[in-house]
Length: 353
Image (tube, rainbow, N blue to C red; front, side, top):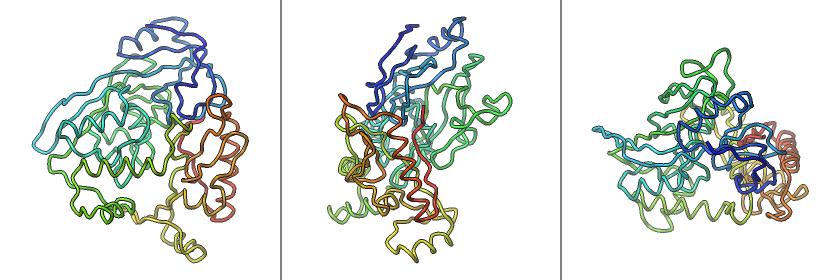
C-alpha cells in the first residue's frame, strides 16, 4: 500500500477545481484495500472513492481518506450462445474500453462512446447516451465491502438500476451489503462485466443519430460507424475537459407525466421531449436551461457552456480555476429559474464533495 499525504486533486477532477486530499491510497488490486482495512489508523477514517473524477464537484479539501481506483485490465471473460462477456478493471478509462470492444469485434457499447470517467463509475451512475444505458449491457460486477473486507458480486437486479441511479448512490439502512439496499460509502467496485449481444442491432432512436443517417446517406450503419458518429456529436456539443474543465452533463433530464408535458407544450411548443417505455416523458434539461436564458452566463469563474446549456464549465482554467462554491451557486440559480418557469426541479448529476 502506498499512502500519500496532501495530494493535489486538481489533476484528478475534470472540472479542474483546486483542492487537496489529506491522505490518498491508490487501489490497483484487492490487497490494497485489505491493507487499508488492516491499518489501525486508516481503518477508522471516513473514505471517499475517486475514479476518473468526471462526475464530482469539490467544494473544499477532502479530509476523508481518498481511495483512488486504478484497477487495470480488459479481457473476454466468457462466451455464451447469445453474448460475449467482457470484463474490465474499475480503473480502466471508459472510452478506452468502448474502443477495445469494437477493435476486438464485440459491439454493443458504441452509443456510450466518449463518456468521461472510469469503468468502475459506470454502474454507480448507470451511465447512458443516445438510447442505450449501462443496465442494457450489464452482466455483473465484483466489489469489496469496506467494513468487512468481504468480496462479493452483484447482478443487474441487485444493483437496483434506474435512470442515472443505482444501489451505490444510496446509503444503507441497517447492515447493507450484497443482500441489502444501499452501498454508498460501504463498497468499492473492482471489476465490471458486460454482456455484449452476438445478434447485434443498431440503436438509432435519437434525433442526432437520425441526422447523421441523413447527412451520410447510411441507413444501416455498423457499430463502428455509430461509434464515429457519437464521438463526432459529443465533440461538437461538449467541451474537452483537458481544454475547458467540466463534469459533462450537469443535470439529469427530468421525467414528467404526459399531462405535465402537454401543459408545458401548450406554453412552450418547442420543448424537446422523448416518450419513455413506461409512459413517462423525458424532457431535455439543456433545452429548459437554454429557454431560461442561461447559455453563456457566469457566476465568478463558473459558467454555462455556450454550445450546450446542460454543461457547466470552469472559465478560469487551471491557473485561476472556479471554486466548487461558484459551481454550486450557479447550479442553484439555474434550478430556481427552471422551477419558476416550468415547475420542474432539476437534479444535479455530479456528486458534491
